[in-house]
Amino acid sequence: MKTEIPGAAAALLASLPTDVQEFALSICRTLVKEFGSKLYVKTIYVGVEINGAMVAALYPAADRVDIALALEEEHPSAMLEDATHLTWPSLPVLVSVGAETDQAQVLALIREAAIRIVNSEHHVSRSPEYFRGRKQRLSHDPSTRLSEGPK
Image (cartoon, rainbow, N blue to C red; front, side, top):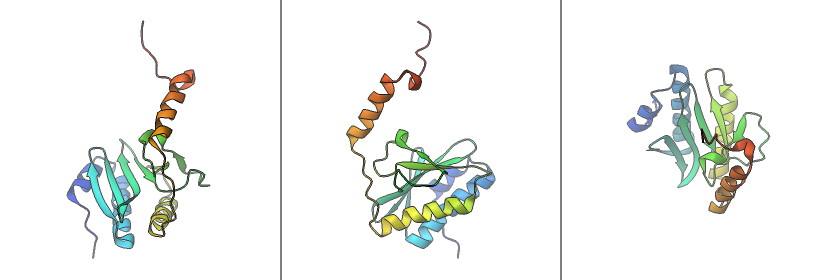
């Protein structure tokens, strides 16, 4: 029996290219079926929780879906990127999934994140000060500033 995805989640992911959309939906189904995850939609992402703890957040983009994950910042996977800009206290990294992405590796990372939550092994919880400090660091570093435009 196929695990149903809430209509709002499917609708948010509908703008993705077909192959990426199908993979994103299969990720959601896997998390619900294997780990009893709950899915919900906020304006720009599909949230995934297990027992009230965030496992992942899926952000659809034009040609990919970015998935913030409950993995440690020092995780050795080369697929992971910093997700500080998303300001999730417990989701410090993300994997960007496009048409050419190794789906087996992505599923392994997602299952690892879910297992960390199920086993209460995920202890990343960044404080609001962490994110305020990041904004201050970025505003003082000329290489990270946005152009101020014409004066």
